[in-house]
Length: 517
Image 1 (cartoon, rainbow, N blue to C red):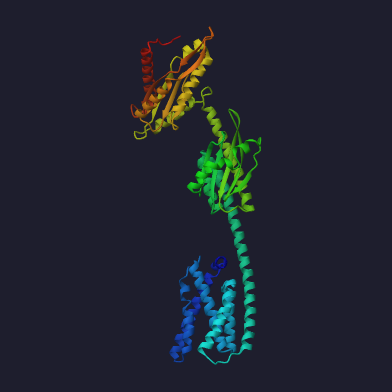
Image 2: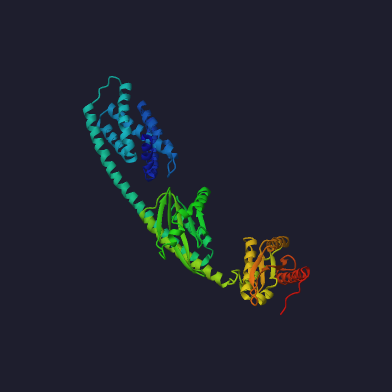
């Protein structure tokens, strides 16, 4: 306990404030002492007793090689010991040996210097020890010497008074200095906050992806709120489904913990029960602070509810930092809402309402972009599918059954494609799959997997005339093409041609005649 308090006292002292002055004073003192030494030596009047002050001054030489700022533990300990041993012990020794006015004034000057440059808690501990050592040194080197105790006591009282005055003045100066530093730090933080808010407004117009925007925001958080880790997360609209997230300054272990336990902190259920309340809430647990609230956005299913959360790991925010963070949260939540709504509108404009697949307009835009960027090393494939027997199902069982056939086929395709593949409804019974970073062999494997699933795919139908119930199999003919075959622009026609051949083969193999109007 004592060692910990001593360490805290040692490192709480603002040595950076006086380090430059210490260097100047030490340099001047050493230079004057050496000049006096050589001057006396040249005149032949140097005494042996002058060697001792020279040794004392020489002990300060290492201070010249100290860094001007940010002293380490070794620098601090050496500095305090040199002050405690040299100034109190040496000048007390001189005063005890000779209580003349010269050495009394010298002792008082040394005491003032000691009070000004040393940490007062350490000075109170070491000063009595140094004076006691000086008395022991006099008795050892000059046995039998008479000591003027009354004069020494008077001088010590004057020195103690000077020590106290210097400490009071020094503490006032240090307090003022620390207050100025605190105000400057607050002003710098406010400037950083305004700068960050301005940057956010600029990034909003430049970055469309919400995950990328979250990463940029957390990078700014590190500069405004140092020595902390951050995580941003948007959960929903389905419970426990993370729509967007970003982490900064958080270990992989902590990230994994948040992904597993995030629903325990301001969970989706709490937000969804608030019925439109979007106030910021917060909780704290085991070194974490969590701020969050609801984001409510219109969607095709009505009002979509998202849970917005910011995780902070590290020291707890003070009241001013908390208010600042709430301003950021409101800004970020507004950005998140606008991005979510923009994405929902884009999805609505690019989605086929019957199947939920992307529509033909979106296909034409994406396909043109991919064709422009197509390279032999970045090939992509196109799968053209046509649902067999759709017109016959429509004529026999009605359009509801036909719509069911289309939806079933679409759901089966979405279930079996890769997460990076895009599925479009191109026309009435035509479906297209775009496979990025895939050659024809990989697309053929995808078609084989889908055909394997089609073996047991059926829909329940009711004949409109007879009311008879029956089951119709879901069958799709496919044609595959790759951007490396004839050029990306001809992929659609090539895949359409191969799909038509596959359809003709299917009808021939099943001894069926194509159903026509």
